[in-house]
Figure (cartoon, rainbow, N blue to C red):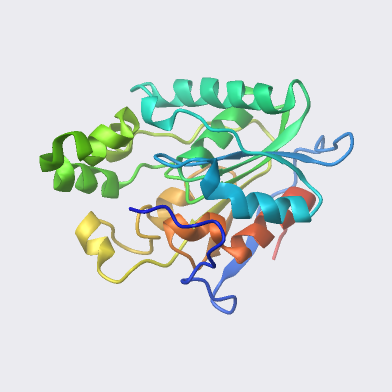
Length: 252
């Protein structure tokens, strides 16, 4: 699927239909920063930092210092959790050295953000996962089957071993430390009929089921009416992210 242009407005988004009211518990009191809060943005599988440019621009406009490094998503091996944590740690060190930061990730990048919080709980502040497949995605298995005949152009060839882990429903949600503040944002809009083609049921964003996107234990939850690829371009998702990074979870 073609990567949306960062300057595009998400066509599926309607502010009246978005439901972005994070709910969670208090915790992670040590979220203070020296100077402007820093945010590590992590792109998804088969994507690049370019897919996060609009989100990065919105976060900077809100007074946050942002770094969006590239990471070799297609070269993840079968040990997906360990590889994710190592990759994210290297990206964070390159971006911020030993300074504290928040982590925000789209799709598989959200899994990296959670793994990084579990690996370095004192160094990583709050985390936000946009459409992250914490419980895998049947769409990955269907995409692999539907494109197998394309050989080197198939989804499996282009996206690498991580696609297999997604298809198998490998558990990707780490156990977060006590008091961690995390927000899972689920997209709830998709092109009509795409769910049937890709094996998705219930509410989903065209790639990841809502239940999978919200499957990080202990995390606050929010819904945004946008498709999977458009979540980083969603103004509502950006507002939700900024509010959570600033204030943490809220009750209602």
